Amino acid sequence: MIQEAATKENAVITIISITIIVLNMMMIIVQVIKNVIMAGVTVAIMAVTTVGVMAATMAEVTAAVMAEVTAATTAATTAVVKDVAAVGAGCFNLINN
Image (cartoon, rainbow, N blue to C red; front, side):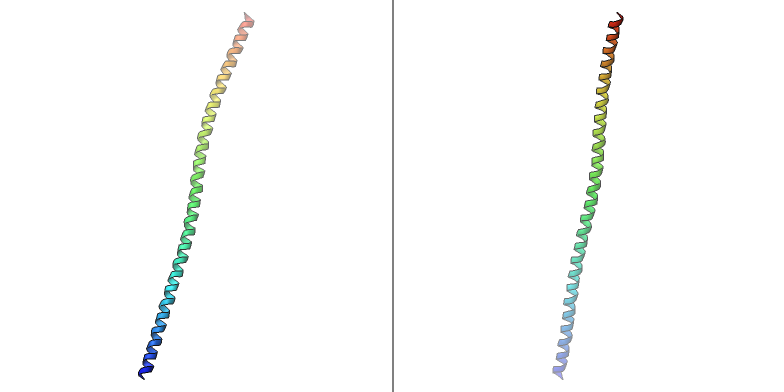
């Protein structure tokens, strides 16, 4: 009778121990899954952020370069037009003199 009680007690302790081990394993699995998901989310957020920042930066740089090129081209063109006009006026004065 005492032996039967001890055997039942040992069985209950074994079942409780196995249950605790299984629960701990499940917690570890849940933690691993959570870490994998968080890593994936972090990578996705970083990718989207990087693309957005690069696009905005490229747009600003492109706009600045285009403004500089346009201003330089306009200034050079204006200077050439003035020079051609001056040469033309000079030729016209030579012909009329």
